Image (cartoon, rainbow, N blue to C red; front, side, top):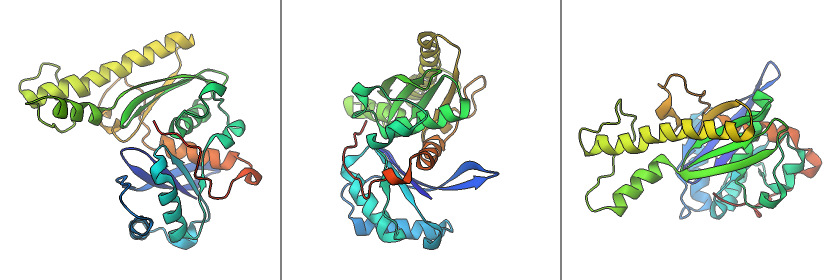
Length: 273
């Protein structure tokens, strides 16, 4: 099965397999989201990159999409159908009743499907209360209690969003590369921004996980995901990093939802965060 996570920073493509009966996923490639690209342009890119990754059309029997960029959903779905011959299923609120996690009714229409996929993957793995931190365009914290109910989400500016905002919102601060400095005492402007944004985000993550645990009433598990989670891979005494968590969640969801419920070419009713 082809898995696609359409986000604000990347469109991530992966493929689902099985290992000893367990769901496993492999990331294939990432594309930059660009609403100016046509279906044909995306089709050419997807076809070429699938071939480079050794994934032929014959091996793609199904396709499952999560999208938080509504303007791109139909274009990507149609491009995938053009390349694979498979009409993708777009994950949305229609599937929520069949998941191992529960989404509060008031937010079903607005919670990002990527956050739901993250929560599913983490809850299936831990089988207990957990906190998912996603380091993407936004820095998000999704808290799931021991019964599988998503108790709440916190959203802050992501790392790249923060450094870009500092650059565009000030007269002299440069656009600095994202890296985790050894010290919070910046010795030049680049180091100072990295110390404040990247190492500062590290402190925010630790503090927010602790507060989520306090409000959930237990010292629950935590996991870090997202394209920028790699910046924290060298940290000790830090939650595990699973860069494939969203794709894993989509793979689990695709297996859990009854095939009779799968809507053909459902490309509406999605919300972006």
